[in-house]
Length: 98
Image 1 (tube, helix red, strand yellow):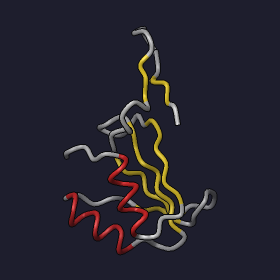
Image 2 (cartoon, helix red, strand yellow):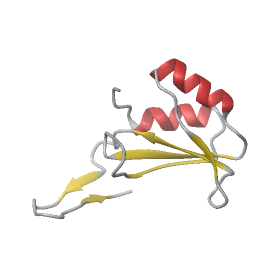
Image 3 (cartoon, one colour):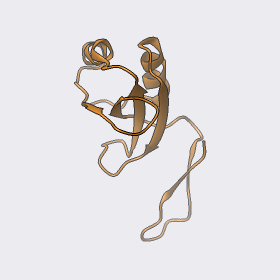
Image 4 (cartoon, one colour):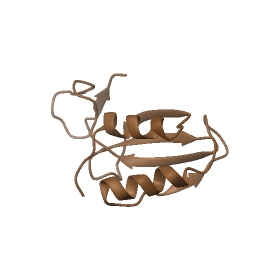
């Protein structure tokens, strides 16, 4: 899988009616970050378009809290200059500004 920028995720999600889009650090993503995208309705068209454009499917889940009823966590790269690495040390974490 090729990494996709957060900006690309945000633009495509907005075109398909996303309620909110933000990014966060993730231990499970191959990029280290995911875009969290929330929708008020099941985003079938967004999911179909995503798979056609990017080449892989995403998991959409129903959620009981948050800005929308449905959410997707999409692996992404972070916006340029938004993550800064501290001094290297065991257990150090990435600091996010946003």
